[in-house]
Image 1 (tube, one colour):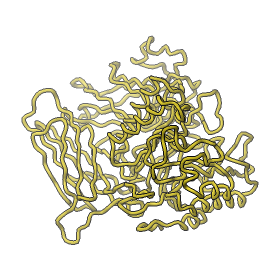
Image 2: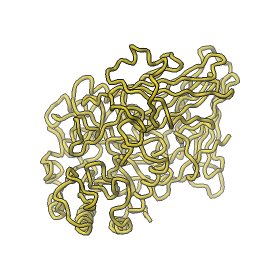
Image 3: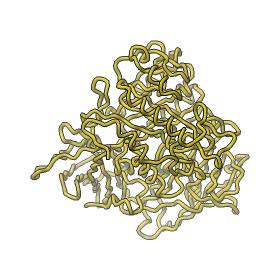
Image 4: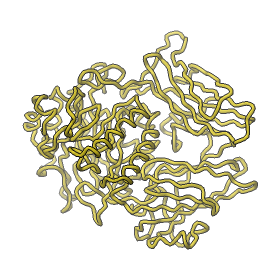
Length: 600
């Protein structure tokens, strides 16, 4: 079997191209909607039918300008939609939610079907229809008080936006879809490439009915450029299958195709699960790539890889954290590449499956980052542990994701510099990440006051190129000092010291500029604002040049891709149009080359 992975980018992508069945039903669009400001819906049994009169366009939230909702932005909201099933769909239902902020409860035809806590990660609800049940009433209750002890990222917990915190998001904000499966089906797979041996390790998680099945087997087939490379069948399987297969085909002139930004080679892979007459077919893909550290450099496939990243917060002018159109994320990625960047640091939000697929397919490295909470105690720590595990699981199979960032600028662990409990918390997340995914690099606390970390990352919004050059001239001075003049924070927490890690300036720049006709009183950026476009570009280019000329840095991340509400320091406007000539940006960045990699 060779399912179509929709690798033709002109076609509409499946909601999750990384784990795709041939038939799926997208549920984006109009839903009935009800605000519940007094939280009385459960007592009034709204799960059997919500009040009529209001609708919303999923996945746009009530706070966005595209939602078509006239609600009062309540902290508790309800959704309802009726789905008619054809004969082929009258099987077990997998109801998928890409992201719902924050605490979700699901009823199907009035029966409690599942719940989930966490505002940025996908989850699935299983439902087994009764015989002849051909219509489903989906009822969703979402509770989001935007508390500082839950991961909220850049959502403002105050009444209004302030500094670099923005409009809040409540409810469904990424795609909802359904799949239909038999009693035996594949729940998930985890794929680990090894370019040294030319092998792929597959861990498959299967679901079977309780009764014993006489015949259970999983067939895995790997393709490259449409050509079958290998096929194996594992028989007499249990609910967990682990196997290793070769992707080094015994064919004339065949070579393993490694994944990199300039050559984003993807292998197609299919899984066919058979059990007592049930057949479940899933299509996926993987990339053969390796991330490592050698001396003071980060390496991709054993080549020095200088990262030229841009900070991407994933916000849009009218739709907040939800892309306004299916094409918007691809257009962003194409703009990033057109400007000469080779990656994005996805900051305080989690990209959709489609976004990650496009980074895999088009060739753009990504960092995955935990959306911050802001108050440390037992419950907030527990929420962070739970959601971070789901974030790791979501990114595991994506070759474009090369680095995990757990905390940012000590947010949520404000006393981590000297507090042993908070240091232990960050370290525990670091080691948990290594246990769940040993293939990627991990940053415990990005920006300053590092504890356990694979990379020394520093944030410095100094607006003077000369000061940047002087502050980072001597590694012995800045690696364990407080070089950033805009924070005065030490690079390492007490009890921790620099141990030869690669050094990357993971936030800098932030030069504010907007045309006078779009300027607002509360618009801001870092430092004084240049008066003209030419002056803004001169400062931006001078700062980037100063950083690229510093041989102590193995890369950088410029702040930021696009303006976000009151923060106007993007290279793109709030509606994601170029502020500056992309060719000028590309020419600037091309001054720094990777050995073994040529970015055209």
